[in-house]
Each structure stands twice: as structure tokens, then as C-alpha cells.
Length: 208
Image (cartoon, rainbow, N blue to C red; front, side, top):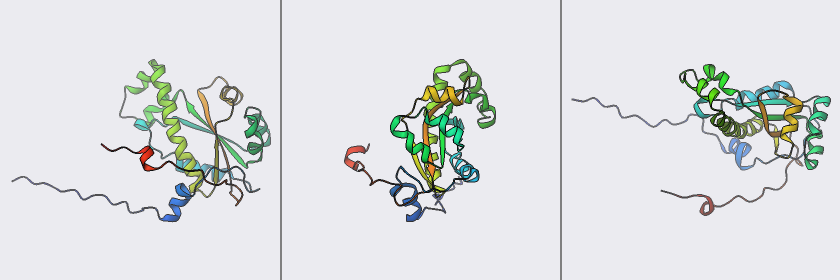
């Protein structure tokens, strides 16, 4: 006689309610302005402490974050933003420069200890290493924006900047490569523009 165990489906005990879903998704929008209220280092650390749990391929975790708060740092950053992004970056209480780490493989003995051949493989194969860093960095960036919202803050992600110039300014000679700048602050009623349309099921879904 064979004993079999029929597994019960796992019901997540913390399914988000409608208010939480609205904060993260259905009412969440890109912020273009913020309240004149400082964002503390503790608040920014809390954002990262949520975002760090994002899934990545084999737990690579290649995204790195530079938080810019000082007036001097802000001026250095704004110099390399596109013209349309300069004023709102200057006005934001905090700014995060998201980067991918070209040398993320050096940390794999900690993050991915069970795959012992990976550090050597990536050290010898730059193409796959950079692909993994960029692709997983973007994956983490999406969670970073959600983490900002989850902490009661507003996020204004932007791609309009000179990445090479920012890297030279803040990460000279290093492995970090900037790919997204996110303005962060406390929202007001005027922070958001009207939501633009989303595509319908018939435009984006297929079934097999």
C-alpha cells in the first residue's frame, strides 16, 4: 500500500486589501512635485529594506542605490539631468540614483552560495554578466518604486539624464552603472497628473 499526501493549496494569510492595492497599483502614479517636508535617512533605509526582498535570478541582487539629499550632491546630480528634469529634481526632498553593479558576481558567495561555479563563470564572461546585472537591476527597480509607495512616500522615476556623466561624477572608476533616477518625497494633492489609459486585455493577453 502506497501512502500519498495530498497537499493543500497554500492560502496567503495576508492578501492585500483594496486600500493597499490602491496605494501600490491602482491609484499609484508618478509624482512630479512633493510637499515641502524632509525625507529622513530612516525613511529611505525603510524603502530599501522593503525593496531588497525583490526576486532576482538566483538571488543575484545587482541593483545599487545612491541616495542624494545634500544641496551639494543635488547640484552635482542636476548638472547631468535633462533640462525637463532639472527643476523637479532640485525640488524633490530626496533623490535615488539606481545603478547596476557590474561586479555583482563578487558577492555571489554570500547571496548564492549553492551555485559555486557562478562567480568564476561571470568573471570570465562579461556579456552574460552585464546582461544579468542590467536585467535584474530593472526588475529590482520596479520593486523599489513600489517600496517607496508602501512607505507612504511618492516616487517620480525618470530616465532623462546623462548616465555616463553621472557615473563619472559619483562612481568614478567603479563598477556601478546608473540606469534610473527616482525623485522621492511626501505627496500632496497636486503631486500627480491624471492617470493615462492602460491597454485592455485584448491588446496584451494571449492564452495557450
